[in-house]
Amino acid sequence: MKDLMEYEFLTFDNDLPIKIILHPVDDTTRFIPRHWHESVEISYVLTGSIETIYIEGTSYTSREGDIVVINSNDVHSFTVDPEEDGSALTVIISYEFLKNNFPDMDRIRFQCISSIETDAQQLSRMAKLRETLDTIIAVYRDRDRDPLAPIRMRGLSYELIYMLLGDFAVEKSHAGAIKSQKHLSLLTEITDFIKVNYKQQLPIALLASQFGFTAEYLCRFFRKQIGMTILQYIHAIRLENGHRDLVMTDHPVTQIAYDNGFPNVKSFNRVFKAMYAMTPDQYRKSKVPNLTRGL
Image 1: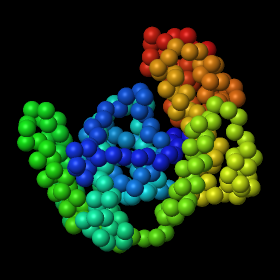
Image 2 (image 1 turned 45 degrees about the horizontal axis):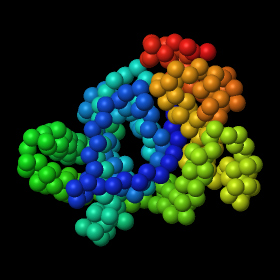
Image 3 (image 1 turned 135 degrees about the vertical axis):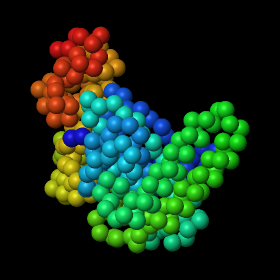
């Protein structure tokens, strides 16, 4: 239960075709929920590692220097080892820009996961891609001191996209990915409903009735598309919010469990331990020593 799922809407600043996010790992970002978006995403580990990058049913480990390109509408999530510090760059590329400038975009996808690549030529191309990403970071960090940084960044963003299209584009396979916009919309409705109502009791029968399905069909549909059961998803979203309360408040663990929809503290402990390899009370004492109320 290390991840969950939601649709993510992204905006692009300063008329650039890319959005840049430099982020350290802290106690509130140990996992990024399962989600998808139309944009293409690049994950580049600067220090430390990402324990698990889940992409469309397959999980990868990404270490310092590794690059992972996540394609449009691929369901993905990130999990970081609770004991490890690190930092990473995320680059989000506008799919609209890609489509407008490369009309065949719908027919291709990018194949770029450095940790599993074995071809020497592709590894060499990835090294050049890494150099471009490093330059983007340097320009981004110096943007307040360099009045020409926006021009340089625009050129680098085009260079980055040129490299992806020229070196890492392959014919799209139609197997295994969520393609149907109807399915994406339905999944968004289901997960939005759970996110709004996760503090309440959410029996499968209620969810099925809410969306006009039988319980069996809803469970089968959700698991087929997402690779996890609805119950696992509900537990995960409760865990995400419970973890936030654990590190940001001094509320007793029992109260946090009930506030976030767990039927009892035993259930919260079980789900939390599956993710963090320790109970909530143990985690709080090790990470937030000033919050000692625990149970």
